[in-house]
Length: 469
Image (cartoon, rainbow, N blue to C red):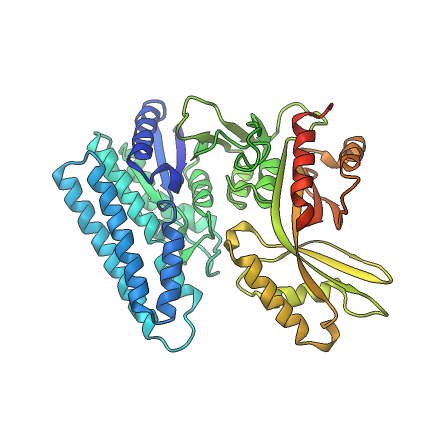
């Protein structure tokens, strides 16, 4: 069967205008494809609010988390009131929203009564409620417009491991759950609207897939339904040469390979989740990134190859990180030992050692913390790492500083010594802390001090836009 999976982000469903666009797109595509599967995120900002509420519950601040839940209820009900829904659909939505929020309040109440530290598992049990609310609103809107639809919670579809806050789907078990609970709906021409970001272990314990995990949900859905394509709908025109919020002159990239897209996501491009590419690559399922407000534009196609080879850089991405360095005398502590210290400092945060170097007099190790770890992860990790280093006599001389990873993206970039030379010449006045080709052969990463990051970004992007200037 001809199946399309479409994922709509929080900015695509948070207003009546946005939902009108979503409705128009779904109605149009329902006539072009045999089967549709929709994946939706929580409304923009909702997950952040739920995380804050969980932390307030942990501190026993009942008034704080109740205020957040009340605000979320008001926001969702206001959105429903603005939609052209029938009396019955509206009443069902009101009841669903109140039920979900009251269940969440019960969990928060239990968290507030625990004297010990609240576990990440308890947080996972609450922060997926935003997706559940959004899925029910979208499904109701589709039904009101004569498209058979039902909201499904992925706790009954996606089976994951037991890693709190960053779970990974078990594709074999998930495929079985989808065959049982979702494929029969598709065969009956029903459009399922499934919740992104959340799953459950094989024993039924709720889990989450990491910040931005709705993209990952969509790719798992595509693989397990044997979809022909997957489309990510967002508020930009596609994958761009740089973040258009920082570079108004950024251009849409028509075609990317899986490796190029994965590297862009990993090194900071916020359009895609870092883990969504791998499942698609295995089954060679094409991915498109499109603008929900400009559906007629083709966006970016991501597939097995990126088209004709050329020695042209395609994009620049950046992400903050941490450097740990020391003046060395004698053997001292290896960078591998420093990595162990870094990992121990933040056990619930993914920390990747991107590059390291040692000499007779100096050592440096550069660590990347993915954007999925949250906006405050760099700060909290730095504090924990400094405390960890200073607690040991052998590592007290090591210091931590903030850095920026700036990565140029294009397939086989490591074969282009001439292009790399020209690029580095443009940065001749900048001190590079480290330079590294990625093992995918699609990335060249420069590590710089934060004060130099803006200059490097603009120099590299200018080179991408005008390679012959």
